[in-house]
Image 1 (tube, rainbow, N blue to C red):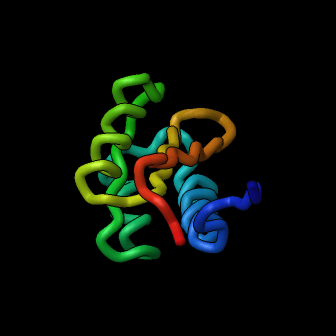
Image 2 (image 1 turned 120 degrees about the horizontal axis):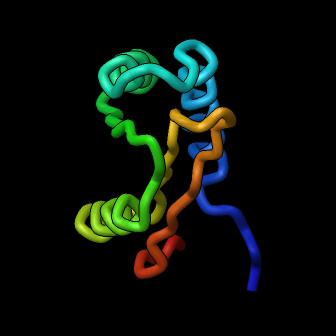
Length: 96
């Protein structure tokens, strides 16, 4: 079985936007500031801001992926000193 990163180009672009926003606002921006700046770079993209990412946040992204029949989601916490985007895969969706 081939071990290939799914949607690597798209993930790279989204992560680039997230890092750009984090570099501009730092870790103390509020949800609206992050959202407005991300929207400036990527239309119709929304993000939530919290101090920590919980298991419930992870499961919420999984529910979005299932409901929308999407393969990949990314969750990120802008409050950390260093940005660490996490890829969340929906294993029930097959990519051909």
